[in-house]
Structures are given as structure tokens and as C-alpha cells.
Length: 546
Image 1 (cartoon, rainbow, N blue to C red):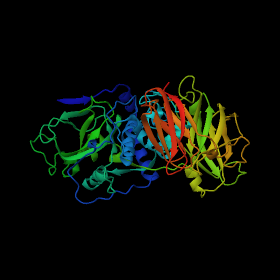
Image 2 (cartoon, rainbow, N blue to C red):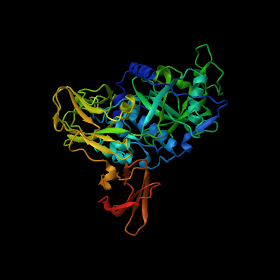
Image 3 (spheres, one colour):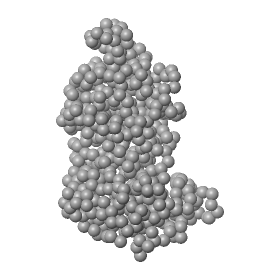
Image 4 (cartoon, rainbow, N blue to C red):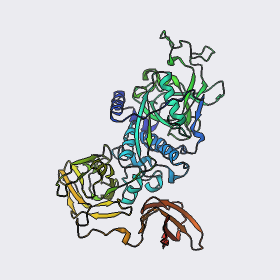
């Protein structure tokens, strides 16, 4: 029985409007803009790799709207790679990453918005400022289709979840296919766990059929990508198997050494054995519970003949295990027209500077994004608080002890107010907050700059070092924001009134955000102490989830 995908509601209506030429253009930018991730071929590869056997792949889910780019790139690939590197399970929401967080910067605030290649932009967002977990975001489907996250503590938590770089390999034959197999096996660096990747293809009129013989009899296999050239879609590669076979020319044999397409040569386009294993984001009704096999030949064939798109490239990313935040800007801003603005940050060693010597722009995040909506995305959400990491700017000028940081809004028209800006400096371990003296600044047409200095002389409102302050625990929206008087790594323990430990966590610095999503609402004692220190733990009593 053949399964033909001719309709997918708003998703296929949207992707039908996308030009294939866009695919090649995106690829060229990708190849030029990012350094290569080394992949070392280590000899004979195993005949199969199945990364679904590892605990790092999140459960199959059904994407909302036209979000395949972020659903694949953030929801599947980024989640898998972060969980693999941290050796944590992807079955729980505290370890899954919120694909709607990136999607809402890329979909023009519309349930029908989004592109198949948005996974590259989602990875840019992960590189520049991080991605929150599902718990920090507020739930798997929270805020669709337009919510922008509010709360500095949430952004600070997201800053710890980053991509180092991303890359692609053009599949031209067996050698480049082996490169991707090596990535799936061990990330090409001898890692004990393999990686996952992204492949793109047209899905309108895509046909699947059950495999008729061999070890995978009865499983679903693509008979090529779809025939319509303007229906691109992104899916996740989670393994490969050289034993998968299908008799594409109907001669009763399964060959890789016979010209079955009539082009007078024998190459990978003629292969009838071998396939990648993929997982889609259309729920468990697709394929075999969301999974299917994709024949190797599709990776080298032309799109009009059932091959992949993006010039036959496969994409993958390398994530960061440990991220040190040296400083970030906390900004409260209000606006009714968020797509009229682009945010950037800057820095200067000159404490009297009126403009930065170096700047950091955000490719898609906060850059004329989100459609013509209030900045929070919903009708009455015209004010949000955001956090922007400036660690790379500090590194770029040699880690000076003092500097001037800048928050910059480039607006197409007069558009709201920058209510407050503060620099949060983590150089001493405990966060130190320096508020800017510039408050309630109207956003003008053109550039509006706010400056703030990491010095006690910056403002009479500057807080003293938090090491001299009492313990602070802020409880809101299923997270605890903890500012500790300790300088070191923290151990956090939550006890019920019976003295039973119900939750524990650790943090690498004196400022941390702890999810309480899985804690039953009630009254608790929260104990915070420092590892390796003689100071006694401090305890606060508070209500969680009430």
C-alpha cells in the first residue's frame, strides 16, 4: 500500500509558495559564514547506526503551524545534541528545548508563517543568545503563534544553552555519505554517542510504501521526495542502515551496481540498498510512529527526480557543554510595533564614549521580527523584560576591568520606550547589577542608544556587591530565581514541611534559575549552600505553585 502526502493543511499551503532558488541561496550563505566542523573517518563503519536507542531523542511530536524549520532544528536536533553532551534524558521537559521560542522570531507572528530553512536561523539564535528549555519557556505549546519571552532570569537561563557552530556536507557519492555516517556514529571525533542532522526535501506528493523483503520488512520507506518542487520541508536524520532495500526498478533484484535510471552510468543514484533513518515532526501518524527510511539515492538525485533539496546538503551543529556568562544587559522595553525595531548591543573601553567601538547584531532575534504586534506578542503585552549576553564583546576587547556597555534600538519610526536598562556583571562570581541612569527613554526614528558603565560610580542607585547582601529568592511562573551571598557553585535543596527532600539542583555560580514545574504546589523550605565552603546553608520558606 502506498501512502501519498498531498495535503498538510496550512503547512503545505505555506511551503508551496517557497522558491527552490531560495534553498541554494541559503546554502551558499551557510557555507561561507561558518567555520567547518572537523569529522574524522575512523576506518570501517558499522553497517547501521540507530540513535533512537539512546535517551537523547525527544518523543515524537506534532509541530504547530509552518514551524518545521524550528521544530526540526531546535525541537529535535538542538535538544538531542544538548542532552547527549550533558548525558541527560530528553524524555522530560526540563531537558527539552522550546522550538516555539525560535519560531516566534521567524514566523512574522503568524500561525501560517515560517520557512523550512529556519533551522539555520534558529541555530544562529542559539549561538548568539541561547534557547530556553520547555519548562523555562512555560510549556511545550506555550504562546503560539506569537509570544516573546519576558523575564531576565529566563533569558539568563537560556544563555547557558548554546551552539558553538554549525556546518553542512554536500552529498556527492559514497565518500561524502560516509562523512555523515561518521557524524551519526560518533560526531566524527570519537565521542561515545553519535549525532543527528537535518535533511530537506519536497513533501507535496511524497510517497511512502512498506518494505517488502529483508530485515526491515513492513517498515515505511520513502519512494523519493515529492514531485512538487515548491513544497520544501525539514526532517531529522537519526541513523542509517545499509541493509534496507527496495526494488525501485521492479526487476526482482536489489542492486547497487546496475544502471536502473537509464543515464548510461552506474553511481549512487542507482542504489537500491541502504537508507537513512529519519523522524518527522508531524506526529506519530506519519510513517512508523513518526519514523521512516530515506533511500541513499535521494541524497544525490535532482529534486525534480525525487532527490533532496538544498543542493543535496545535510546540516548539523556542534553545541557547547559549559558556557560562562561574564556580563549581560537587562532591558525593560515597551512597544506596540515590534517588527519596526532591531536591537543590538555594543561596548567601549572609553568610559566617556557616546557610541560603542564594537557592536553585536542579532541576525533574526529582535531584528524587525515577530510581525506587527505589541512586543510581547499578545494584545495587551506591550512591555517585556529581556536579557542580552555581551560576553563575546567583553572578550573582543581583552576583558577590561571597566567598560561602557550599550543597548541600541534601530527603529523605523517613533515606537515606544526603553523603560530601564541595567548591566549585570558576573566577573566576581556573584552578579553585580549596575543600572543605567537613563530611564523611560523614548524610542525615536533611527538609533536610540542607552549606555551603562560597570563601575560603582555609574549611578547612585548602583547595588553593592551581592556578596554583602542577604539571600534573595524570587518565585514566579514555575521558576525560582536565586541570588546568593555565596561566591561559589551552589547546592539547592527543596524540602516539604515533613522534612522530606522533594527536589535538588546544582548551579555553577551564585546566580541561578531553578525550574519548579514538577513540584506539587504547596509550602516548602528552600536551602541554599555553597560547595566546599564552611559557611552554613541559608533557608527560606515560600509557597511554590500557589
